[in-house]
Image (cartoon, rainbow, N blue to C red; front, side):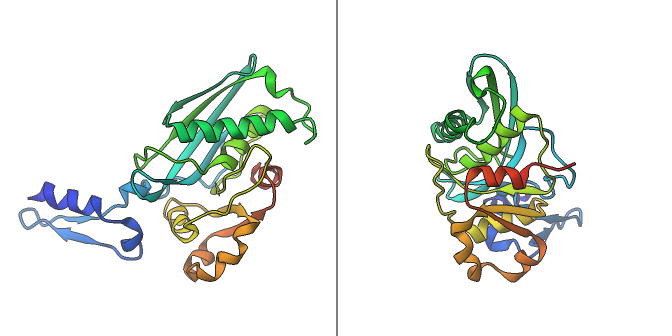
Length: 233
């Protein structure tokens, strides 16, 4: 019985219950069990201090689960010949999103003022999901920033989440389900969320308590997102 109740709590949509402490009492032991939002990841996962170069958090839409999920992207850049390898979560959409971000940076690195030759590095990209997501194809800007951070060896700011997808030409897509993503970000411990400027019109529908706890910053192109994300410390 206890196991069945726990499983039922796990299957509940965390967005619906994120403002309440849903729990039950075990009559045999008297213990109270809290319904955790395991689908979105355990709370307070995002550290306040700067992250190591190439390490970043984002929130993507998982169509297999029908909800937004927290992801962690970790990129290691080593001298090589331009090979890119994705490990951890390796769905087709994730790989395509990472490849798109890498191709854009490789094509435009010199125009952006980078001294490093992007093609002289091999990139190992690990994608993790604390909530056991399987898929997401809308985190291209986070991949871009993580790759750039790893190559220039500059850490990223703490308490940070980057949202947004990009095309090979650097065009940005509007972020869907912004309110849900903001709540997942807050629950995970984020203090800052960087989003595309095109989403500015959506803020009338964001609950005020989210905007009170998370600082929102906008970017109009991928490089501006990187400038805002890379830590100055």
